Structure formats: structure tokens, C-alpha cells
Amino acid sequence: DGGITQSPKYLFRKEGQNVTLSCEQNLNHDAMYWYRQDPGQGLRLIYYSQIVNDFQKGDIAEGYSVSREKKESFPLTVTSAQKNPTAFYLCASSPYRAAPIEGANVLTFGAGSRLTVL
Amino acid sequence: GQSLEQPSEVTAVEGAIVQINCTYQTSGFYGLSWYQQHDGGAPTFLSYNALDGLEETGRFSSFLSRSDSYGYLLLQELQMKDSASYFCAALNQAGTALIFGKGTTLSVSS
Image (cartoon, rainbow over all chains, first blue to last red; front, side, top):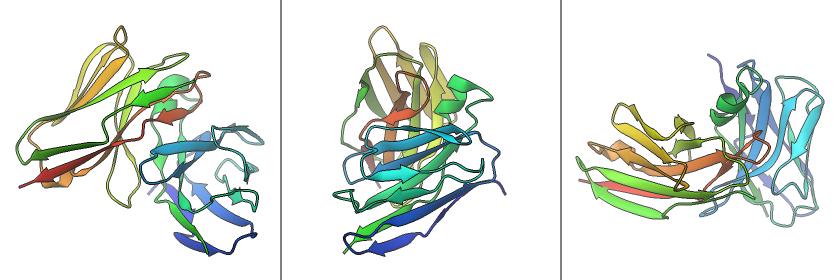
């Protein structure tokens, strides 16, 4: 079955450590996204990528980095510069290039990664 | 920038009808989407309104009025499984990524 796989599901990190969250999709979608979710805050956009080797900052990119070397993969690194990294991280994809506006509205999400900084 | 406002909580009983409103302020507007998220789960797409009017999908309907910068999600014949958070969303100014409201938590009781 096609879908998005995020790993790990739970992650604990000490302050000052970088951590990388994995996101893999087999939907053949062009666009991929990372969102952060905190209680009562909805989903906030961190980074997104519409094509391999290109990505754009979202509203809260500071302290995060991404890469898009393959169409299927969009890993997110939470760096030590992120002041409050404890959160639920959601990866998503969309068939953006097939139907730019309509496609960008229909996101498929992974199950999420919950990061806790100790 | 984009901002979407929706109520934080709504409560209802099984079998009832509930409406979740969303008002938006956007630099560019490409339509309004709705997502459902059960506690601890992933958001799932419910509907997308590109044009004014009502879109119906089973027990769920979504409405958009561009002139009022307003939309709503209507849930009919509520069931316990409808207890979840519901998010409205709109594309950013460039039309390349979704920006979400803070979500409305719906609690359905028997």
C-alpha cells in the first residue's frame, strides 16, 4: 500500500544534540512538507520541497534543516539551535506538480514522530 | 500573511448536527480545505472548496463564501467516532504550501 513512513515514532534527545527524523513516501508525490504540532497551536509549517534538490522555508524554519536528495525522502534535522524542540512532527506529501493548486490542498500525512528533549 | 480563525472547542450529542466555522485573512486565496485528526493520529483530508458554495461528501459538507472570507464544515448525524480535532487550511500567498488554523476540538457525547 502507498503511504508515508515516519521514523522513529518516539525519540528522546538531550539538550544540545542534533536529531534527524526520517520521512519516506512511495506515493510518487512531488511535494513534501514538514509540520510541527504543539498542543493548541495547530500545525505550523517548517520546510517544504516541491522538487528534488530544492526546498523552501516555512513559518518556523529557524533551528531546523532539511535535504531532498531523492524524490521519496525528505529528512528533517532538529538542531541544537532550536530552542524548544519538544513537539509532534508530521511529514506530508502532495501531488503538487500534477495539479498545482488542487494538489497542494490534498496532503497525505505520516503517523508522526514525537520528540522529547530531556 | 495568512491567518485562519476557528473556535477552539465544540460539543454535541450523538445524532446532532454541528457546524465548525472558519474565517480567514490571506494575501492570496486559492480555496479552503478541511482536515480531521483523531487524538494522537495523523491528519486526514476531508474536503476542499475552490469555489463558493456547498460541497457534500456523505455526512460531511463544507461551505465557502469568498466575499465573506468565511467557510464552515457541517457534520450531520454525529457519531462518537467523529470526536476529533478539525482544521481548516488555506494555501500560502505563493500557492505552494498549506497553512492551518489552530483547530477545533469536537467532543461527541451519548
